[in-house]
Length: 147
Image (cartoon, rainbow, N blue to C red):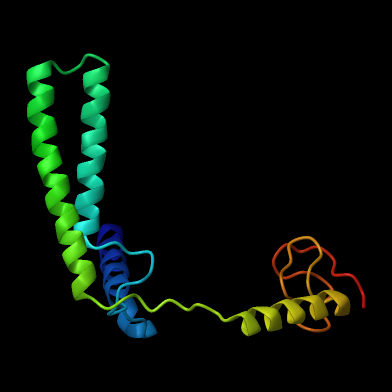
């Protein structure tokens, strides 16, 4: 009986976990973010790391000359192919849409932060901007100085 109830609860938990994105309305992004790498970039990084490891292994005496030359040739060819694919991918896709704020927006933000420090709403310890009238910082919990 207890085993059956546990199995049913576990099954319900799994179903809720699977349905969670549908229930909360969260979606996976369709585009590539600024911190995501492409397959070609990953292949390039892997080939270059493998080349580095082969160099270390050769210089520490773990590889003899014949194996070193063979592995280095293969990995160099892989790295070159990956770099060519990466360059081709970069030419095919549009540049990432990165927000580059202009000087005026940066200056406005600096003025806003300075005003908040003067008004006592920005935390003097961590710099977190708190709502007007806050007595404690929402980020670090320290007391926000009075205006």
